[in-house]
Length: 139
Image (tube, rainbow, N blue to C red; front, side):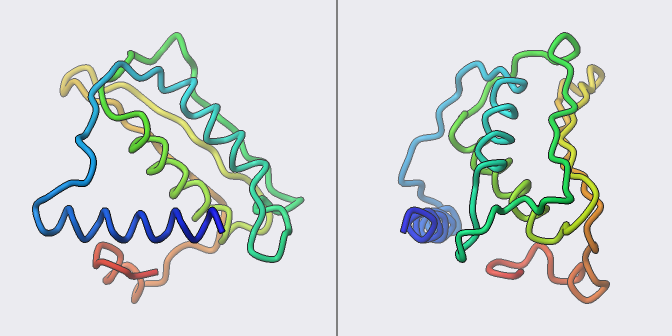
């Protein structure tokens, strides 16, 4: 039920964003990315699929490869950033049956950005899927 509610909320928020309106003002506060990623990795490690099985397969190692001393505090909406990371990590989990899912980050001081990467050893995206990846409501 919670997963369905999240899905409905995400679809509604996407529709509002496309219409130029947001149901929630985007918060901009200091985010400790190390703590946020730890939280997302922990939530995903405990998550179950629709059948009640662990989302992370037994032969998959999920890890946070961020090093806190190397990362700046960033400003943004912690709820939106957590949802984005959770979506990326759970998507990786759905398609990774063995191997690893790693979350890492690096600061680009020249551009004043933080790049977060979710890398997995899953099957990847087909060439046809790559062509549609940024279209709304695609899987």
